[in-house]
Structures are given as structure tokens and as C-alpha cells.
Length: 143
Ligand code: AMP
Image (cartoon, rainbow, N blue to C red; front, side):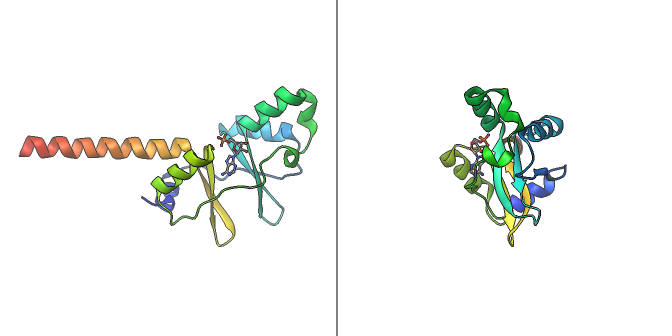
């Protein structure tokens, strides 16, 4: 299955934030949308960075709550690993495992069109395995 097909099965809009927004706003957005990472985009829509709940926990442990008024840009990861919609799900799974991150923004023609999380990948894999075992069961029953 391709990333594009996986994105089509996902509901919900793409959640982004300005790199200039305070961390408090990012924390509210992560909690409000029940997501684990938020993508920072410039006013022109360019991908500037990614901020995950892990970044927030780490910076809070290091600097304390005063940091929450600092901009997202001071904490986010700038070197974002992305994928294209035509890549396959196993390839993205491998990229997440190697990079030790759970979110990969999907970019097409320099525009971000979605984000794939480890949860989406695992859900797809479980459905695929259930389908395979049902097919195998049917085959054995009718053989
Ligand atoms: P995560 O596992 O997604 O919560 O992220 C773990 C760490 O990797 C955090 O420091 C994130 O900012 C960073 N990160 C998350 N996704 C990506 C990505 N696609 N490319 C680069 N870094 C990322």
C-alpha cells in the first residue's frame, strides 16, 4: 500500500503551527487534537520543523515551565525527514525505525499534504495481517 492510499483512509485535518507561536499554544494544540507531533510551517506554507510531545517533555525537564513562553522554533527539530505519497508503507516503517521517530510529514510538489504516524502504520499492518489470516482460514476450510 502507498502513503497516498493510507492518507485517504485517515480522517481529520492537517494540524500545523507557526514557528513563532509560543510553546503553550503548541501544547494546547497537541492536547486538543490528541496528536503526538505538530508540524511548524511558515506563513507561505513551507515546512520549517516538527515538534513532538517528546521535545516538550525533554525541554520541560531541562528548563522548567518558564520555557513555555518561548517560540516553537527554539525547540522544534529543523531537519525534518519527509516522504512522498508514492512511497510504500513498509518503506516509511523502515524510515521511522531507523530515525527513531514516530511521525513523517508527506510532501508533494513542495507542499505538505499530510502526516503519517506510527499509529497509522501499525493500524494498517494489523488490518493487513487480519485480512491475510482470514484468507488463509477460508482457503483451508474450502480446500
Ligand atoms: P517522535 O517519536 O515523533 O515523538 O519524535 C522523536 C524526536 O524526533 C523528536 O525530537 C522529534 O522532534 C523528532 N522527529 C519527529 N518526527 C521527525 C521527522 N519526521 N524527521 C526528523 N525528526 C523528527
